[in-house]
Amino acid sequence: MKTQLLIAASERDYAEHLSNMLAEHHSDAIDVSVCSAAEHLHEHLAARKFDVALLDESMIEGADLDSINLPLMLWAECDGAAEGSAELKKVRKYQRISSMVSDILEIYSKELKNERGLYSKKARITAVWSPVGGVGKTTAAIAYSAGRAAEGKQVIYLDLEPFSSVHAYFAETGRSISAIFEMLETGEGNIKMLIRSIRQQDDSSDVMYFSRPENFDDMNILNAENIAELLDACSEVADELVVDMSCACDERTQTVFELADRIFLVTDASHTAQIKYSQFVSQHNIFRNIREKAALVANKGAVISDPLVDEVIHLPAVQSPDAATVFSTLSGVSFGT
Image (cartoon, rainbow, N blue to C red; front, top):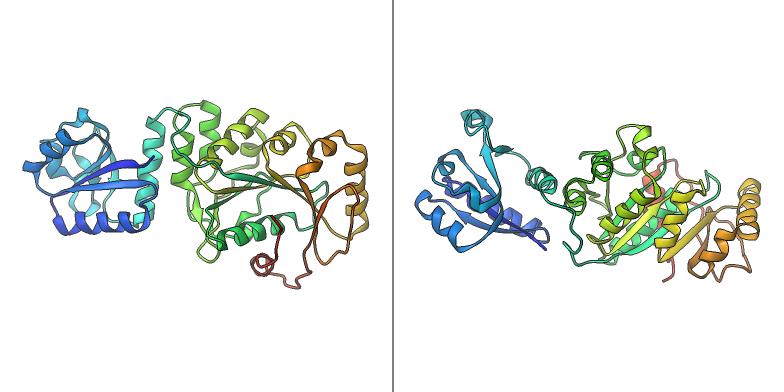
């Protein structure tokens, strides 16, 4: 479901430019209408129900604000408009369109209840896990994400590791994922809309992602129920959700396994990785529960087979110190179906 947005600004050229940019780049999230004459604003509000209205100062006085779910004031620092209408939350007029959309959706997300069915998609969930660190799990997860994005899918990469390495692969220019964690903790607001507002998109791969947590404890406070709610919310605003997990095998990990449609078990040829992987598949009851949807990913050129796993994916060794180069190279490798 799209957010119904009204732009009520007396500066016609600005209103039309903003409308065109939103229609071109954000039509999946926003349905926009424009009113640039104060005498016609009443007609717009009477004819249609708007979720959000962006109103410049000249439009506010004559507007029926009660008919708008979320009226916001468009203000510009240069003309001091922020001083008026203190009761309205404000959105800065002259800024990057993507930043403005994020501001609008984030504010609106806190006004809405977290109702199910707000969006219609239901992504396939792919979990990426390893019982040992250092085998290239994150690189494999992002490479797979980039490959699916190249196929035209809307892909969200979700990093649930306690120490995030998102910044090694993607630029971090938006809000931290900690904003989502806070909403999960309070239970107030609409998490699906918040996800749409703060997710970022990598220019080279088109993979959507979130900036790392503000501190280590933000990730640690999530319980299994929070994880389930987070995956459910993300899966409703994308075609595929790729979950990069910690090496722990705790209740949160088991929750992801249960919700996943496909699970990549990543390992390499190192002795430690082979021992820990072997222990997991031969001695752990969890593996028996996920075996039918698990695939072994042999990374870094490892030649490995496992009679307990039906599908084995071999990733070549890529010699580069740059993480982004490695995942970009591997994104062209087939990960099967």
